[in-house]
Every structure is written in C-alpha cells, then in structure tokens.
Picture (cartoon, rainbow, N blue to C red):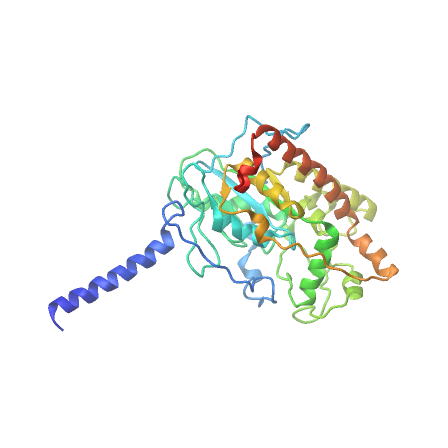
Length: 384
C-alpha cells in the first residue's frame, strides 16, 4: 500500500474515533445533539435482569437524610428571595417520578429540550439512540445537576419514592462531585395527575403486561419483605387482569400511589401493617405527603401542562425549546363500572383524591404568584 494511502487510512480512523469521543463527552452547551429514547421502557414487561434487584444494593441507602430545599414561603406560597437555585455551583434537581403521571414525557423533555436562555446552550447532551443523557454543570467537568431516569438512571431503584430518594440520592451524587464547592443542595420536584385517570391508566398499563415488580421499597433501614408486600399475581406479569381482580388485591400499590410515594413512610411504620391502625396509618401518611408536597421546589399537574411549564421555567430559570402542551395527549379512559366496582375504586383512591384537591389549591397559589411577579408569563411558552 502506498505511503499516502496508509496516511489517509490512519486519518480516517482517527477522525472517526474523535467523533465517538466527542459524542460521549461533549457537554450540552457545546454540542447541540439530541437523542431518541426507546418507547419500550415500562410499556412492555422488562426482564428481571434489566432493572434487577442486584443493581440497587442496600449500601446505596443510609440513615442520613437529604431532604429538599423549598423555594416557597410557607404561608402565602410566594417565591423565597433568600434562596436561588444555582446549577453552576452545587445544586441538584431531583425528579420524583410517580407512575402514570406524565413523568416519562416530561423527563424526556427535560433532557432533550431544556436550554439556558442566557446563553442559548442546551442543558443536557444526548447521543443518538442513547437511553440517557449527560446533564453536566455549565462550568464544565463531570458534575451533573439533574437526578432523573433519563439522566442518571434508576440509581435509587425503579420509580424510587420520597422515602428512598432522601436516603439515597446523596450516596449516588457524592462520588460525582469532586469540586470544592459548598455542600450539595437538593431541590425536589414531581408531577401529579387526577387520581381517577391515573389509577385507570395504571390498570390498563398492567393489563397490557407491564410491571414494576423489581422496585425495592426501601424504608427504615431495609427493603420491604415478601410478607409485607405480597405479589398480586403468579408468573412474570399480570397481563389480561380484570378490573375486579386489580381492585381486589390488598397489596396492589396502585392504590393511593401518589400519597404513598410522597410521604415519609417511616412515620407510618414503613410497610408493617401491624404498626398502627388503618385509620391512623392513612391519616399520618396523608399529612406527611401534604407536608412534603408543600416543601417541593416544584411540582406540576399534568392536566394543567401550560401552567406547569410556566411554573417550572420561572422557578429554575431554564426554558423548554417548545411548548409542552403539544407533547401530551390527555387520555380520559371511559369505563362503565358496576356500583360495587365504583365503591371499591373510590376506596382505592380516597387519599389521592384528598391530596390532589390540596395540590390543586397549592398549585394555583404558586402559579398566581409567578403571574403576579412576571409581566408576561406566556413568554415562557414562546408566546408573545
């Protein structure tokens, strides 16, 4: 082979290798790359090894709590002036992803279309075909500012709840943060959905064959035992389950899921059903969920996606590249239920209904506070 041919071949190989390195390590504010995510996650039953129990070990959790910092004055729910989120420094946004609340689409939008309006740079960097993106701090390095399914992955377990996150997130993020900045601050956020629609959406999802059976449910220093949370079905999935059977299983975590996932479950004895009476358990769990929701730096309601976008962008100073309303399709599942089914159904979502009523009031207060302090809040949606 002539010398010039060998040199040309070497140059081609080096160019290709450099491109691969750039795709992996290039931060979002330098590379304007986008990535696509597989629709198969949580739509079809995942093999056990994919989100296997071995991936989330006991040592990922500890007794030290890292609760989030509120950005709102407790009484009037107006924005605090003494706390500002600084993603250039040591602040981290933590997304608590509750099943069937629109969190998958919202999570994708966070990593794929968020940008810094002051620089125009993407907030995250995504490789084509990658399932996760890198959300590095604008200052450079390998420190990340977002803890979520599509950035860090399910590091604290599949759909980790509030109880798990506050005892795990710092264990995950601490090794990534090697700079001598102030201690890490965490700002929690979540999405909520009308309990009626959310529960039926989960029922249909499970009926199609999806499961979350590899979720760990850590609380009080250990994982929930098989005796505390008994599986509702035999085999790999509950595909084809009837509404009657779905409602009848006493350990079906679809019941009041939003309340349970936002509460500090240690306050109700974790998953130990004999720790207190059912009435005391429900009362304390709902009170805990309300208190934690009130402390959230941000929460949105999927039925009010425009206001959710306005509130998110005003809270964190980031912008979505497009109006999110176009990304969401409200699904109002119409069911004809017997009187018995309807009574059972309302029992299963009773706490979530109370929580959601409280959340709507809180949400309206926060949105109104933002509108009052912003001359043209619709600018957040790209509307003049």
